Image 1 (cartoon, helix red, strand yellow):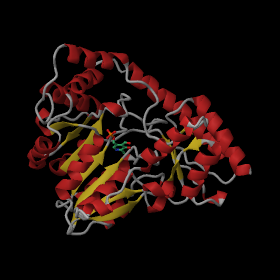
Image 2: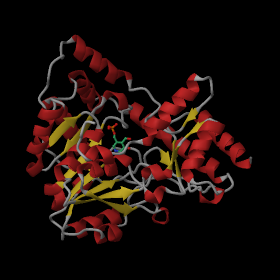
Image 3: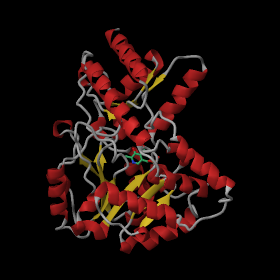
Image 4: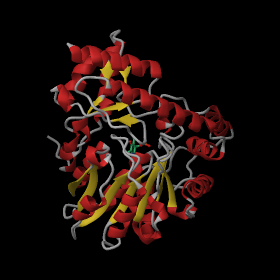
Length: 389
Ligand code: PLP
């Protein structure tokens, strides 16, 4: 038997990938599966972005770039950050990474050690907890409650901070709930964090463009009092429908930047050069496709919410952001994971059981509405028929 480090016995997974694999396998057997499981836009990357990557390849950009990313790519991220948050960020605080997950990995690796406590949202993106477990740090779930609009509660979050807390992970708009934390709550949280200068903050803002009903996305960057310990996770995957390109960016405070640069040199050297040129074109080019995609998500969101609320035993709060709905299925009498699995196997609808996102996910399922209106309506019909059985 080979002996590996204990972290590998604790590391978890993202069940969305397992559901995708099962849905694909069922599809290959000829079953008609409607996939509301995986969290990726169903749109193609806009053509001018693809063209920029092809041009970069033709122009001979085949080699390594600086480990932190092309200067032009980091400057583009700085321009985009100024445009969306009103905040100046130096390209020397930005690093281009192979997907948002890598920012998460770096931030958690930097702070995770057995004596540390790391706060993360529950329900939340499953990789937060998985990576915390990997490092041996203590995962401390921050409850995200339906009755609170699936937003962070400043009071509940602050009450969990101890002298051992090293990192607080925030996410708004949120996966899996679609929750958006309101300005007043973020302001209160930041005010409270000022009394805990030993706590770093990682704000996962990867869904920043996807807010609805006039809801605003408030970046944590707009609070100078925590800037020296704030890590911002963002990227191209969701906004420009580029999940397979593996392109993310993160913003790091001066005191952490060089640690991440070294991690990049050791782990991934750099993000592939053509993707970085594509990333520049995404930021600097027309945003019509992004706006079109967000409008489509907004329309589908209404269809999903109305459809789910018409079903017996299901109640669905209206998500304010991202492209997920997180309906409460407690009244159906089904445990959420079993319901998700039965819906895939028997009704041909792929979605994810809430417990895959945390303890408080029991009683909920996650639907990604990154699918056509027609398929969403068909899925609702199938769920209705299934529940009537
Ligand atoms: N953060 C959240 C909240 C996500 O939902 C995801 C992807 O689903 C990511 C980060 C990771 O994105 P990427 O594909 O860029 O690694």
